[in-house]
Length: 261
Image 1 (spheres, rainbow, N blue to C red):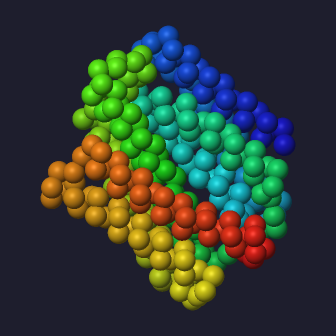
Image 2: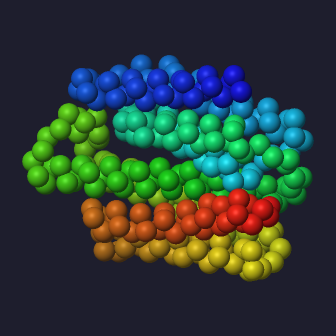
């Protein structure tokens, strides 16, 4: 629990430093990396220690939520350390702290031994969700930036963001990576998960496929018709909403309401 508390405090300190940086309209200071990097390491250690004691990886609802938060925090730290969109940490680091706290309070359950093929499917899914969640935040950031520029409202936080074209390019690169990971998730599911269309999995499967189709349509529209701006934002958020319902919506109902693993 001590590791969890230290990680949470470090996450919040990193977010606070970024907020201060935005308010003072400073350049791309990397002071926030000093608390963010150990927070990510401690976040991972909190899971690793639990897995060692439980004898396997815990991938139930709160554990999966925390791992997605960890993935988002890791990617944000890597993005930000290279001087690209560190401001994203203002949102991501508190999310990571909240998911870690929820995991520490409610999420540690007896782990079940999983075949390596099912573990591969699960890890592909978690990486896909974390990557596409970052894409959703980038889409919202792009919408806010476009809206402010359209209204000629030159807020200080705009200086912390890359140019509009670069941000849009980063969004589609992130979606492409997430789409590849989501494709791998669905493929490993088809190959390795028995009864993929069983009653307790059919909603998850159908919603995941719909999300995959939406992200695929967005990438195709970008390639063939040059989709951008508000169109890209709408497609991204719609596809992400389907993915959240597919994974965490299904897990919430199955595990927390129906009490099934």
